[in-house]
Image (tube, rainbow over all chains, first blue to last red; front, side):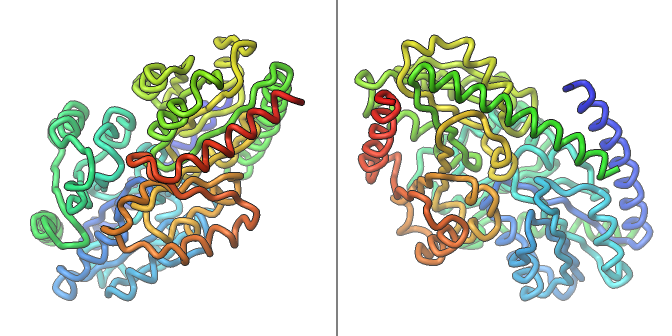
Length: 223
Length: 223
Protein backbone atom coordinates (compact mmCIF):
# COMPACT_ATOMS: atom_id res chain seq x y z
CA UNK A 1 0.00 0.00 0.00
CA UNK A 2 2.81 2.39 0.80
CA UNK A 3 4.04 2.41 -2.82
CA UNK A 4 0.59 3.45 -3.99
CA UNK A 5 0.54 6.29 -1.48
CA UNK A 6 3.96 7.52 -2.55
CA UNK A 7 3.01 7.58 -6.21
CA UNK A 8 -0.13 9.60 -5.45
CA UNK A 9 1.96 11.91 -3.29
CA UNK A 10 4.53 12.38 -6.05
CA UNK A 11 1.84 13.39 -8.53
CA UNK A 12 0.45 15.84 -6.01
CA UNK A 13 3.88 17.33 -5.35
CA UNK A 14 4.51 17.77 -9.08
CA UNK A 15 1.16 19.47 -9.53
CA UNK A 16 1.95 21.62 -6.50
CA UNK A 17 5.28 22.76 -7.93
CA UNK A 18 3.63 23.77 -11.17
CA UNK A 19 1.00 25.86 -9.40
CA UNK A 20 3.75 27.33 -7.20
CA UNK A 21 5.64 28.45 -10.31
CA UNK A 22 2.45 30.09 -11.61
CA UNK A 23 1.92 31.86 -8.29
CA UNK A 24 5.51 33.16 -8.37
CA UNK A 25 5.12 34.41 -11.96
CA UNK A 26 1.96 36.24 -10.94
CA UNK A 27 3.72 37.88 -7.98
CA UNK A 28 6.73 38.77 -10.14
CA UNK A 29 4.50 40.39 -12.74
CA UNK A 30 2.94 42.53 -10.03
CA UNK A 31 6.32 43.37 -8.46
CA UNK A 32 5.35 41.79 -5.13
CA UNK A 33 7.99 40.13 -2.94
CA UNK A 34 6.57 37.16 -1.04
CA UNK A 35 7.77 35.14 1.93
CA UNK A 36 6.55 31.82 3.31
CA UNK A 37 6.68 31.99 7.12
CA UNK A 38 6.99 28.60 8.79
CA UNK A 39 7.50 27.46 12.38
CA UNK A 40 6.40 25.12 15.14
CA UNK A 41 3.19 26.13 16.93
CA UNK A 42 3.78 29.13 19.17
CA UNK A 43 7.25 30.10 17.92
CA UNK A 44 6.03 33.62 17.18
CA UNK A 45 4.91 33.88 13.54
CA UNK A 46 2.06 36.26 14.27
CA UNK A 47 4.14 38.32 16.73
CA UNK A 48 6.87 38.71 14.09
CA UNK A 49 4.28 39.77 11.53
CA UNK A 50 2.97 42.41 13.94
CA UNK A 51 6.51 43.74 14.50
CA UNK A 52 7.16 43.72 10.75
CA UNK A 53 3.95 45.57 9.92
CA UNK A 54 4.68 48.16 12.61
CA UNK A 55 8.13 48.81 11.14
CA UNK A 56 7.30 48.82 7.41
CA UNK A 57 3.76 50.21 7.12
CA UNK A 58 2.75 52.40 5.31
CA UNK A 59 5.96 52.87 3.25
CA UNK A 60 5.72 49.21 2.25
CA UNK A 61 2.21 48.02 1.39
CA UNK A 62 1.73 44.59 2.92
CA UNK A 63 -0.71 41.77 2.27
CA UNK A 64 -1.06 38.67 4.36
CA UNK A 65 -2.33 35.14 3.83
CA UNK A 66 -2.89 33.11 7.02
CA UNK A 67 -3.20 29.36 6.96
CA UNK A 68 -4.99 27.65 9.83
CA UNK A 69 -6.34 24.15 10.25
CA UNK A 70 -9.68 25.58 11.35
CA UNK A 71 -12.01 28.50 10.72
CA UNK A 72 -10.38 30.41 13.62
CA UNK A 73 -9.15 33.59 11.93
CA UNK A 74 -7.48 35.12 14.99
CA UNK A 75 -4.09 35.50 13.30
CA UNK A 76 -5.55 37.13 10.21
CA UNK A 77 -7.43 39.54 12.48
CA UNK A 78 -4.26 40.39 14.40
CA UNK A 79 -2.57 41.11 11.06
CA UNK A 80 -5.47 43.22 9.81
CA UNK A 81 -5.45 45.23 13.04
CA UNK A 82 -1.75 45.89 12.48
CA UNK A 83 -2.50 47.31 9.02
CA UNK A 84 -2.28 44.49 6.49
CA UNK A 85 -4.76 43.36 3.87
CA UNK A 86 -5.39 39.86 5.23
CA UNK A 87 -6.90 36.70 3.77
CA UNK A 88 -7.56 33.66 5.95
CA UNK A 89 -7.25 30.12 4.58
CA UNK A 90 -9.01 27.32 6.45
CA UNK A 91 -7.06 24.20 5.41
CA UNK A 92 -9.85 21.97 6.70
CA UNK A 93 -7.53 20.11 9.04
CA UNK A 94 -4.68 19.89 6.54
CA UNK A 95 -1.33 20.28 8.33
CA UNK A 96 0.32 22.63 5.81
CA UNK A 97 -0.47 25.10 3.05
CA UNK A 98 -0.30 24.00 -0.59
CA UNK A 99 0.22 26.12 -3.68
CA UNK A 100 -3.40 25.79 -4.87
CA UNK A 101 -4.64 27.25 -1.58
CA UNK A 102 -2.33 30.23 -2.02
CA UNK A 103 -3.51 30.61 -5.63
CA UNK A 104 -7.09 30.98 -4.40
CA UNK A 105 -6.03 33.48 -1.77
CA UNK A 106 -4.06 35.51 -4.34
CA UNK A 107 -7.28 36.02 -6.29
CA UNK A 108 -8.83 37.59 -3.20
CA UNK A 109 -6.04 40.20 -3.02
CA UNK A 110 -5.41 43.17 -5.32
CA UNK A 111 -1.72 42.53 -6.01
CA UNK A 112 -1.31 45.88 -7.79
CA UNK A 113 -1.73 47.59 -4.40
CA UNK A 114 0.95 45.51 -2.64
CA UNK A 115 4.75 45.48 -2.29
CA UNK A 116 5.14 42.59 0.13
CA UNK A 117 3.10 39.43 0.73
CA UNK A 118 3.55 37.44 3.93
CA UNK A 119 2.18 33.90 3.85
CA UNK A 120 1.80 32.54 7.38
CA UNK A 121 1.88 28.76 7.17
CA UNK A 122 0.24 26.29 9.58
CA UNK A 123 2.30 25.89 12.75
CA UNK A 124 4.17 22.67 12.03
CA UNK A 125 7.89 21.87 11.93
CA UNK A 126 7.56 18.87 9.60
CA UNK A 127 5.07 19.00 6.74
CA UNK A 128 5.20 22.58 5.37
CA UNK A 129 8.89 22.10 4.45
CA UNK A 130 8.06 19.97 1.40
CA UNK A 131 5.58 22.33 -0.27
CA UNK A 132 6.65 25.24 -2.46
CA UNK A 133 3.94 27.91 -2.37
CA UNK A 134 5.40 30.20 -5.02
CA UNK A 135 7.02 32.65 -2.60
CA UNK A 136 10.53 34.10 -3.03
CA UNK A 137 11.97 33.13 0.35
CA UNK A 138 11.18 30.58 3.04
CA UNK A 139 11.54 32.12 6.45
CA UNK A 140 11.58 29.84 9.45
CA UNK A 141 11.00 31.04 13.01
CA UNK A 142 12.38 28.96 15.85
CA UNK A 143 12.06 29.90 19.49
CA UNK A 144 14.74 29.19 22.05
CA UNK A 145 12.11 27.60 24.32
CA UNK A 146 11.88 24.69 21.86
CA UNK A 147 15.36 23.52 22.88
CA UNK A 148 18.81 23.54 21.29
CA UNK A 149 18.45 20.05 19.75
CA UNK A 150 15.81 20.98 17.18
CA UNK A 151 18.05 21.33 14.07
CA UNK A 152 19.25 17.78 14.71
CA UNK A 153 15.69 16.48 15.04
CA UNK A 154 13.84 18.43 12.33
CA UNK A 155 16.46 18.68 9.58
CA UNK A 156 14.02 18.98 6.65
CA UNK A 157 12.64 22.29 7.85
CA UNK A 158 16.05 23.77 8.63
CA UNK A 159 17.32 22.61 5.24
CA UNK A 160 14.30 24.13 3.47
CA UNK A 161 14.68 27.56 5.09
CA UNK A 162 16.51 30.48 3.44
CA UNK A 163 16.26 32.61 6.56
CA UNK A 164 16.13 31.58 10.23
CA UNK A 165 14.71 33.89 12.86
CA UNK A 166 15.62 32.69 16.35
CA UNK A 167 12.96 34.22 18.58
CA UNK A 168 12.36 34.70 22.33
CA UNK A 169 16.03 35.36 23.10
CA UNK A 170 14.82 37.45 26.09
CA UNK A 171 14.07 34.09 27.77
CA UNK A 172 17.64 32.72 27.36
CA UNK A 173 18.64 33.56 30.98
CA UNK A 174 15.90 31.21 32.24
CA UNK A 175 16.67 28.28 29.93
CA UNK A 176 19.39 25.70 29.39
CA UNK A 177 19.98 26.51 25.73
CA UNK A 178 23.43 26.04 24.19
CA UNK A 179 23.51 28.58 21.36
CA UNK A 180 26.79 27.24 19.90
CA UNK A 181 25.44 23.70 19.74
CA UNK A 182 22.22 24.94 18.15
CA UNK A 183 23.91 27.12 15.50
CA UNK A 184 26.41 24.37 14.69
CA UNK A 185 23.45 22.11 13.84
CA UNK A 186 21.84 24.84 11.75
CA UNK A 187 25.02 25.54 9.72
CA UNK A 188 25.63 21.82 9.16
CA UNK A 189 22.25 21.57 7.43
CA UNK A 190 22.33 24.89 5.55
CA UNK A 191 25.70 26.68 5.59
CA UNK A 192 24.41 29.74 3.71
CA UNK A 193 21.34 30.36 5.87
CA UNK A 194 20.73 33.91 7.05
CA UNK A 195 20.19 34.01 10.83
CA UNK A 196 18.54 36.76 12.90
CA UNK A 197 18.39 36.50 16.69
CA UNK A 198 15.38 38.44 17.96
CA UNK A 199 12.84 38.96 20.69
CA UNK A 200 9.46 39.89 19.28
CA UNK A 201 8.41 40.86 22.80
CA UNK A 202 11.22 43.34 23.57
CA UNK A 203 11.98 44.27 19.95
CA UNK A 204 15.65 43.26 20.30
CA UNK A 205 17.26 42.32 16.97
CA UNK A 206 14.14 43.11 14.93
CA UNK A 207 15.75 46.01 13.03
CA UNK A 208 18.30 43.73 11.30
CA UNK A 209 15.45 41.52 10.05
CA UNK A 210 13.50 44.58 8.90
CA UNK A 211 16.53 45.93 7.00
CA UNK A 212 16.99 42.61 5.24
CA UNK A 213 13.31 42.41 4.28
CA UNK A 214 13.15 46.06 3.12
CA UNK A 215 16.13 45.38 0.86
CA UNK A 216 14.40 42.33 -0.67
CA UNK A 217 11.22 44.32 -1.33
CA UNK A 218 13.21 47.17 -2.94
CA UNK A 219 15.08 44.81 -5.25
CA UNK A 220 11.81 43.25 -6.39
CA UNK A 221 10.34 46.66 -7.17
CA UNK A 222 13.32 47.50 -9.40
CA UNK A 223 13.31 44.28 -11.43
CA UNK B 1 -7.69 15.10 -7.46
CA UNK B 2 -8.58 15.88 -3.87
CA UNK B 3 -11.39 13.31 -3.83
CA UNK B 4 -8.98 10.59 -4.91
CA UNK B 5 -6.57 11.56 -2.15
CA UNK B 6 -9.27 11.46 0.49
CA UNK B 7 -10.42 8.02 -0.58
CA UNK B 8 -6.86 6.69 -0.40
CA UNK B 9 -6.49 8.36 2.99
CA UNK B 10 -9.71 6.81 4.27
CA UNK B 11 -8.54 3.34 3.28
CA UNK B 12 -5.26 3.97 5.04
CA UNK B 13 -6.98 5.21 8.20
CA UNK B 14 -9.24 2.14 8.26
CA UNK B 15 -6.25 -0.15 7.88
CA UNK B 16 -4.49 1.84 10.60
CA UNK B 17 -7.37 1.43 13.05
CA UNK B 18 -7.40 -2.31 12.50
CA UNK B 19 -3.69 -2.63 13.20
CA UNK B 20 -4.11 -0.33 16.21
CA UNK B 21 -6.77 -2.69 17.61
CA UNK B 22 -4.39 -5.62 17.13
CA UNK B 23 -1.60 -3.72 18.91
CA UNK B 24 -3.93 -2.97 21.82
CA UNK B 25 -5.03 -6.61 22.08
CA UNK B 26 -1.38 -7.66 22.16
CA UNK B 27 -0.60 -5.16 24.94
CA UNK B 28 -3.71 -6.21 26.88
CA UNK B 29 -2.75 -9.86 26.66
CA UNK B 30 0.66 -9.01 28.11
CA UNK B 31 -0.84 -6.76 30.82
CA UNK B 32 1.06 -3.72 29.54
CA UNK B 33 -0.45 -0.23 29.87
CA UNK B 34 0.52 2.01 26.95
CA UNK B 35 0.39 5.76 26.37
CA UNK B 36 0.81 7.77 23.17
CA UNK B 37 2.75 10.94 24.03
CA UNK B 38 2.11 13.81 21.62
CA UNK B 39 3.16 17.47 21.51
CA UNK B 40 4.55 20.30 19.44
CA UNK B 41 8.34 20.21 18.95
CA UNK B 42 10.15 21.11 22.13
CA UNK B 43 7.18 20.97 24.52
CA UNK B 44 9.04 18.51 26.73
CA UNK B 45 8.12 14.93 25.77
CA UNK B 46 11.57 13.54 26.43
CA UNK B 47 12.01 15.58 29.63
CA UNK B 48 8.68 14.21 30.93
CA UNK B 49 9.76 10.68 30.06
CA UNK B 50 12.99 11.16 32.01
CA UNK B 51 11.05 12.43 35.05
CA UNK B 52 8.59 9.54 34.74
CA UNK B 53 11.33 6.90 34.49
CA UNK B 54 13.11 8.40 37.48
CA UNK B 55 9.93 8.20 39.59
CA UNK B 56 8.64 4.77 38.54
CA UNK B 57 11.74 2.65 37.83
CA UNK B 58 12.40 -0.10 38.86
CA UNK B 59 9.02 -0.82 40.56
CA UNK B 60 7.33 -0.29 37.20
CA UNK B 61 9.16 -1.87 34.25
CA UNK B 62 9.06 0.58 31.37
CA UNK B 63 9.55 0.24 27.63
CA UNK B 64 9.77 3.11 25.19
CA UNK B 65 9.17 3.59 21.48
CA UNK B 66 10.48 6.86 20.02
CA UNK B 67 9.30 8.18 16.71
CA UNK B 68 11.53 10.60 14.82
CA UNK B 69 11.49 11.83 11.25
CA UNK B 70 15.17 10.94 10.91
CA UNK B 71 17.73 8.41 12.07
CA UNK B 72 18.66 10.69 15.01
CA UNK B 73 18.01 8.48 18.03
CA UNK B 74 18.86 11.07 20.69
CA UNK B 75 15.53 10.74 22.48
CA UNK B 76 15.67 6.96 22.57
CA UNK B 77 19.18 7.23 23.99
CA UNK B 78 18.04 9.70 26.66
CA UNK B 79 15.30 7.22 27.58
CA UNK B 80 17.67 4.25 27.66
CA UNK B 81 20.06 6.19 29.88
CA UNK B 82 17.18 6.82 32.26
CA UNK B 83 16.49 3.09 32.50
CA UNK B 84 13.97 2.15 29.81
CA UNK B 85 14.12 -0.52 27.16
CA UNK B 86 14.01 1.76 24.12
CA UNK B 87 13.23 1.22 20.43
CA UNK B 88 13.75 4.00 17.90
CA UNK B 89 11.48 4.37 14.86
CA UNK B 90 12.75 6.39 11.92
CA UNK B 91 9.56 7.47 10.11
CA UNK B 92 11.57 8.42 7.02
CA UNK B 93 10.27 11.97 7.04
CA UNK B 94 6.70 11.02 7.92
CA UNK B 95 5.20 13.59 10.26
CA UNK B 96 3.49 11.19 12.67
CA UNK B 97 3.60 7.59 13.87
CA UNK B 98 1.17 5.03 12.44
CA UNK B 99 -0.03 1.79 13.96
CA UNK B 100 2.02 -0.43 11.62
CA UNK B 101 5.23 1.30 12.76
CA UNK B 102 4.33 0.61 16.38
CA UNK B 103 3.50 -3.01 15.50
CA UNK B 104 7.04 -3.46 14.16
CA UNK B 105 8.51 -1.84 17.25
CA UNK B 106 6.42 -4.07 19.55
CA UNK B 107 8.07 -7.09 17.98
CA UNK B 108 11.44 -5.69 19.03
CA UNK B 109 10.35 -5.56 22.69
CA UNK B 110 9.77 -8.43 25.12
CA UNK B 111 6.33 -7.38 26.37
CA UNK B 112 6.33 -10.03 29.11
CA UNK B 113 9.05 -8.04 30.89
CA UNK B 114 7.12 -4.74 30.82
CA UNK B 115 4.36 -3.01 32.80
CA UNK B 116 4.25 0.32 30.97
CA UNK B 117 4.96 1.31 27.38
CA UNK B 118 5.53 4.95 26.47
CA UNK B 119 5.23 5.77 22.77
CA UNK B 120 6.84 9.13 22.02
CA UNK B 121 5.27 10.48 18.84
CA UNK B 122 6.87 12.86 16.33
CA UNK B 123 6.77 16.47 17.60
CA UNK B 124 3.75 17.81 15.71
CA UNK B 125 0.53 19.43 16.93
CA UNK B 126 -1.53 18.53 13.85
CA UNK B 127 -1.04 15.15 12.21
CA UNK B 128 -0.51 12.64 15.06
CA UNK B 129 -4.01 13.43 16.41
CA UNK B 130 -5.72 11.40 13.68
CA UNK B 131 -3.82 8.15 14.09
CA UNK B 132 -4.69 5.56 16.74
CA UNK B 133 -1.55 3.56 17.61
CA UNK B 134 -3.21 0.98 19.85
CA UNK B 135 -2.30 2.64 23.14
CA UNK B 136 -4.70 3.03 26.09
CA UNK B 137 -4.41 6.79 26.58
CA UNK B 138 -3.37 9.75 24.47
CA UNK B 139 -1.31 12.13 26.54
CA UNK B 140 -0.63 15.57 25.14
CA UNK B 141 2.10 17.87 26.43
CA UNK B 142 1.73 21.59 25.88
CA UNK B 143 4.21 24.16 27.09
CA UNK B 144 3.19 27.59 28.31
CA UNK B 145 5.80 29.14 26.01
CA UNK B 146 3.63 28.14 23.01
CA UNK B 147 1.04 30.76 24.00
CA UNK B 148 -2.44 30.67 25.54
CA UNK B 149 -4.26 30.64 22.17
CA UNK B 150 -3.21 27.13 21.15
CA UNK B 151 -6.41 25.20 22.07
CA UNK B 152 -8.32 27.59 19.83
CA UNK B 153 -5.90 27.06 16.95
CA UNK B 154 -5.12 23.34 17.18
CA UNK B 155 -8.48 21.90 18.30
CA UNK B 156 -8.00 18.40 16.78
CA UNK B 157 -5.09 17.60 19.06
CA UNK B 158 -6.76 18.94 22.19
CA UNK B 159 -9.91 17.01 21.31
CA UNK B 160 -7.93 13.81 20.73
CA UNK B 161 -6.13 13.95 24.08
CA UNK B 162 -7.30 12.10 27.20
CA UNK B 163 -4.70 13.79 29.38
CA UNK B 164 -3.09 17.22 29.07
CA UNK B 165 0.23 18.00 30.71
CA UNK B 166 0.88 21.73 30.76
CA UNK B 167 4.66 22.02 31.05
CA UNK B 168 7.22 24.76 31.76
CA UNK B 169 5.04 26.50 34.34
CA UNK B 170 8.29 27.74 35.96
CA UNK B 171 8.48 30.21 33.03
CA UNK B 172 5.03 31.73 33.66
CA UNK B 173 6.42 34.80 35.47
CA UNK B 174 8.32 35.78 32.30
CA UNK B 175 5.43 35.29 29.85
CA UNK B 176 2.09 36.85 29.00
CA UNK B 177 0.06 33.68 29.38
CA UNK B 178 -3.58 33.86 30.51
CA UNK B 179 -4.15 30.50 32.22
CA UNK B 180 -7.93 31.02 32.54
CA UNK B 181 -8.29 31.78 28.83
CA UNK B 182 -6.17 28.76 27.95
CA UNK B 183 -8.03 26.30 30.21
CA UNK B 184 -11.41 27.64 29.06
CA UNK B 185 -10.40 26.72 25.49
CA UNK B 186 -9.22 23.29 26.60
CA UNK B 187 -12.46 22.49 28.49
CA UNK B 188 -14.60 23.70 25.60
CA UNK B 189 -12.99 21.10 23.35
CA UNK B 190 -12.79 18.26 25.86
CA UNK B 191 -14.70 18.83 29.11
CA UNK B 192 -13.55 15.57 30.70
CA UNK B 193 -9.82 15.99 29.99
CA UNK B 194 -7.41 15.35 32.87
CA UNK B 195 -5.02 18.28 33.29
CA UNK B 196 -1.66 18.33 35.11
CA UNK B 197 0.32 21.54 35.44
CA UNK B 198 4.01 20.73 35.74
CA UNK B 199 7.58 21.87 35.33
CA UNK B 200 9.80 19.06 34.12
CA UNK B 201 12.79 21.25 35.00
CA UNK B 202 11.94 21.95 38.66
CA UNK B 203 9.82 18.83 39.23
CA UNK B 204 6.81 20.89 40.33
CA UNK B 205 3.50 19.08 39.80
CA UNK B 206 5.13 15.88 38.53
CA UNK B 207 3.98 13.74 41.48
CA UNK B 208 0.27 14.13 40.58
CA UNK B 209 1.00 12.90 37.05
CA UNK B 210 3.05 10.00 38.42
CA UNK B 211 0.24 9.00 40.80
CA UNK B 212 -2.26 9.01 37.94
CA UNK B 213 0.02 6.91 35.73
CA UNK B 214 0.89 4.44 38.51
CA UNK B 215 -2.84 3.92 39.11
CA UNK B 216 -3.43 3.18 35.40
CA UNK B 217 -0.56 0.67 35.32
CA UNK B 218 -1.87 -1.07 38.46
CA UNK B 219 -5.40 -1.36 37.04
CA UNK B 220 -4.05 -2.92 33.87
CA UNK B 221 -2.05 -5.49 35.84
CA UNK B 222 -5.22 -6.59 37.72
CA UNK B 223 -7.46 -7.02 34.69
